[in-house]
Amino acid sequence: MKQQIPNNAIRQVLILATIIALGIVLFNQLKTLIPAFLGAYTLYVLLRKWMFILMGKYKWKKSLSAALLMLLSFLIILLPIFLVANMLTTKVAFFMEHSQEVLGSIQSFVEKIEAQYKIQILTSANLEKVTAWGGNTLPKILGATFDTLTTIVIMYFILYFMLVDGRKMESNFYDWVPLKDENTLLLRKELNSMVYSNAIGIPLIAILQGIVGLIGYLILGVDEPWFWFVITCITSMLPVLGAAIAYIPVSLLFFANGHNGKGLIMLIYGLGIIGTVDNLFRFIVLKRLGDVHPLITGFGVIIGVGLFGFIGLIFGPILISLFLVLIKIYANEFNIEKRGEGSPR
Image (cartoon, rainbow, N blue to C red):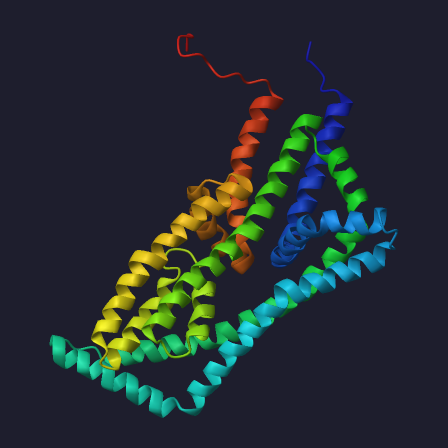
């Protein structure tokens, strides 16, 4: 006799297939909002405790509590970013107004290097490449700026509803996730721990590295040391090159002005001190905040920036940690035990 497939199994497969198909459609249409959602979730994890304190201890209304916390987060987190953007915009405007003088200085510096080391840099091919790069990069920067502002607006829109309906949202999370309660708690704990450690740790490391750089800038008499402090803080959060994007140009400026000794010292200080303390701070701070291995942070930042943009600095390491946690949950969920060294394979 042919075994008949149970009706419940057929219904379950059809419903799951429908859910997956709709999920794919919704994801494709809303994937541009992923950075906004991730940013909202990051702020929710940081503000959740204070939201419950205002509502429980001080009996504030949900909407008022959410509005106050959103305003404070904007002032503490986003206002400095806007001030930095304004500072950089001022520098770009100065460059545009004095472009001929700046380009003349750069050209004389390059010609000096060419004469000293018998190399040719200012070839027509190189100039064409630089011009093409500038023409392609400027529209991207303007587009990224507009996208960032849009993302911030949508992020706060999502954050408001997360804060107001926080308890209900968390309750639904426990009900809907098809895992044992202990594994659901483990997943939530690991996610929140990683968000907290990266959201606090990465900016803190950037500021500490910027301070170390500022000390060197002040000692060597760098022009506008606070501007370069800001640049060091920003670039130290970027993968691979990091703060070298800041201190190498400073060193080159010294060489261009004939201060070869200061240029060499700046280069040695940057590579030996600024670069080293980054690894030291990263190991100590992230290990203390969330027991995060430096390799997870390093590879996570590279992956995250490519996937999510700037917010990927936080969520890239979380992706790797989440992958490792899910492996642990899978083993626990389906009772997969480790084999002993002497057990048969």
